[in-house]
Image (cartoon, rainbow, N blue to C red; front, side):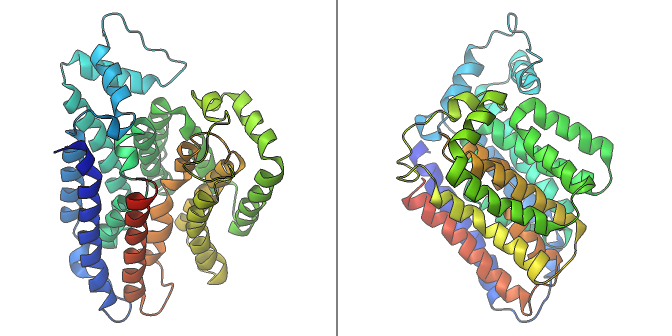
Length: 363
């Protein structure tokens, strides 16, 4: 398949799948959980097919950093390379191990894609066991899901491992949760932010209202002191490419002023959902409170460095939780009457927005 067609095929598939499930929900009445959706077989098959399809993609500039990862893998000499434990040691070890075992480039990409997709599937299965299909459709229909499976490979894989780690930590399974956090950090150091936010949400933060207030305050901090905040975080060496990403560059592809109002508006939707469920409706769910806390804390960090070049990479430190913040209450919490019907409309709008943005603006 030609590289230019991959995103088009992806958009067609998510449109068909989401429309099928969404319209079925719209036609339903009352708050019900479809019994057939309890099975995880079909969403698992969907994830496996996607991993194989995207892993066997051709090497092309169309897929962004795929070219850079391909060049690094193909030119790597495992006899001379040594793991640098100060940086992403697990990613280096993974590349060296695959190259030393004789895996082809496409086999390596397929392995990474499988880790990216299946870690998200496993997390959804633990968070939303009563409707895995709906949860998986929200994940695969996310605005950045396709992009981070072909472009930000390392970031996407690490964040989905953090998502799975959060599931174990919420279930008081500290050893597997801690090991997954360590693995994510060893793949991409930026995951220190969502890991720290998760621990803060589990151990220290009990009232989501304070987190919401901090998120709102981060907008004003960014507007009036964004340059100073960006310089401060850049000096910390938070990420291996932080100093490059925080250098002012041409921002025209995202917004004309440098403050990305389009990204901010997109980021607001889960915050509105969290506010409505946790504060407006007063529904208490410890797992959901923690998930919303992690999203808002990480998103607030991104807002404060929003003028950075390539700040979408920082946005993904919260955006990987975007579909979970939206889907979790739809599956697990009694938020509305006729919830099945509203869930269908939300899924249709959610997928439609992704298709619109990728087809006409961010694609």
